[in-house]
View 1 (cartoon, helix red, strand yellow):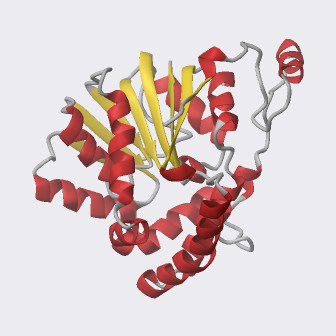
View 2 (view 1 turned 120 degrees about the vertical axis):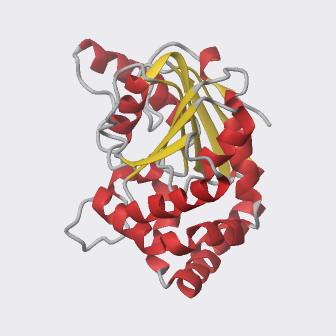
Length: 281
C-alpha cells in the first residue's frame, strides 16, 4: 500500500486544509497559530444539546458500551481486527516498553498490543466509564491485570509527566477529540524523545465504486443496524458525519508536522476506508 511520507515533502509548513506554505510561514513569523477551529471539532452527536462535544461523546459511548464490541465485529465483518493489528505492528521495530492507549474504549487495542508486542506496561485512558467497565472485565478474564491498567482520562489533559511513554496508540478516537490539535500536542508531551504515535482512524475511499457502496453503508446500513442492536441510531449517524469532516490523509500528517512530530506518514487500508497515521517525537 502506498505511503504518503512527509519527510520527502518540502519543509515549509502547511495548513491542514491544504493552504500553501507561505501562509503558515507568515503565521509562524508573527507567532500566530496556523490552524484554529476545525470543522471536525464542531461535529457532535446531538446538535441541540447544551453539553460539550466531550460530554456528549462520553454519554454516547456509555449508552452503547454493552453492544460496542459486537457492533464493531458485525458492522466491519471482522476486518477491524486486522486494521488494529496492522496499526499496532507499526511499533514492532521500536519495541516499546511502556505504552499509552488513548481513547482505549473496551481495551481492544491494549489487549492486542499486549499479545503482539509484549511490553512491560500498558495504560489505557478513556472518558467513558461505561466503556472502561467492559474493558476491565475483558482484561480480568484474560488475566492481564498486572500488565494493563485502565483509567478515566482525557486526551487534552493527560495526567502523566512529560516523556513518560515509549509509544502512544489511538484507535478510532481522534475524531472524538473536542480540540484535535490540543489532544495531539498533549500526546506529544507525554511521549519520550524518539517515541512514536500511531493513530488508526476511518477515512473516505477515493474509488468511485467503493465510495458509492461506502455511502450507502454509512448512511443506511450502519445507522439502522446501530438502532436495531443498541437502540441508538444517533451514534452511527455521528460516525458518518465525523468521518466526513475529519482532516484525513495529507491534511492530518500536516497537522502532525506543524505540531512538531517527525517522520509522519499515512498508510491507507481497505481501499481507503481506514488509515494509519504515524509520527515521532
